[in-house]
Image 1 (cartoon, one colour):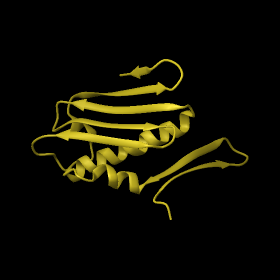
Image 2 (spheres, rainbow, N blue to C red):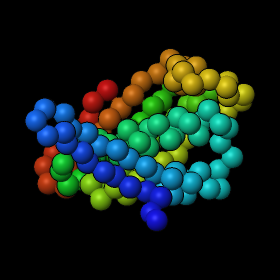
Image 3 (cartoon, helix red, strand yellow):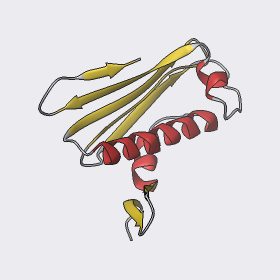
Length: 127
């Protein structure tokens, strides 16, 4: 049984559709060899799922990168994924990382950058 999966669903008769993603294998491979504290692991997992869902929803050939940068204990968290659901990511942190689920507690004052790079066409970046 595959531990990574992406399922699309549609409810007949109403305008509701969605995607459900599970990324156990990819998530574990991304964490291997890194000693990330639990809050950093959670943050990377959330970004991993968001990137996967974006690449599946936008339906284009290319890649998407979601990057968080800030002045908090987690100075960088970045995930890159493509239309084939190939995903990778990394984080940089220093000092004590608070046990918090709030992105602002981890990243501090910062920004998020989303970069869309189609295989054909122009690269687009939003801050």
